[in-house]
Image (cartoon, rainbow, N blue to C red; front, top):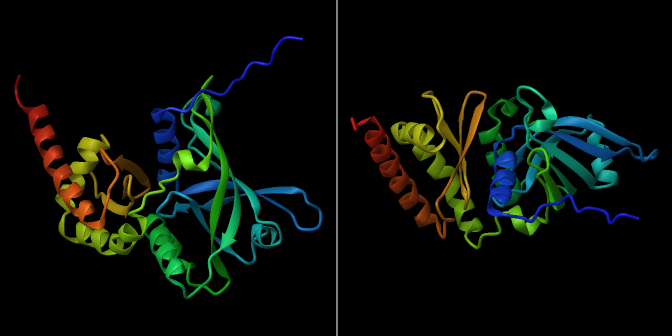
Length: 259
């Protein structure tokens, strides 16, 4: 019998960055859960954001079939990735297996997750505060990344989560930093969008900052911008954003100068 070929590639920096980009930039995902009683798999579409470390976060109504499913059996699977033109199977996607943990209300964790979720998905403000809605953090067990034909990777959570010692300090400083940037430094955000994200001009705003980078949005468009190196403190956040604005301005000016 012929030896079975291992189709999985060795994990590299490009695969990790793609996995993080797919998850951080996603605003929705397909969620699969196990139906109580029958054990049958059921799938649905959910709104999606991430916690500071990159773990997926969803908001679910008690009336939705997947909420009692998660409460009865927390095992679930999440699929992220945008199909584009042509063959939808030619576009990158990632499947994450996880265990869902309901976030208790009136806790600092709930406050943090709610702010990040609503910053990423502002339309959810219409129903997020209703009493029958709950946030769930999906604690990842494993991930399978398909980066395109012949490019499959198995990624343990430690490979793609941002397990940074500065996460708590960054989480405490994030809300004020994001609000300050959006209210007072729209020009800098426009520079980030044009230079680092290679995005068209628009009304870009920052929706979240974590140790590895930040997310910007203009309406339905979302882009992920990575830092050159992970942040080490809340103070590093401010310095890095200032430095990146200068780098983007200089880079754009140089590209427009005659040869």
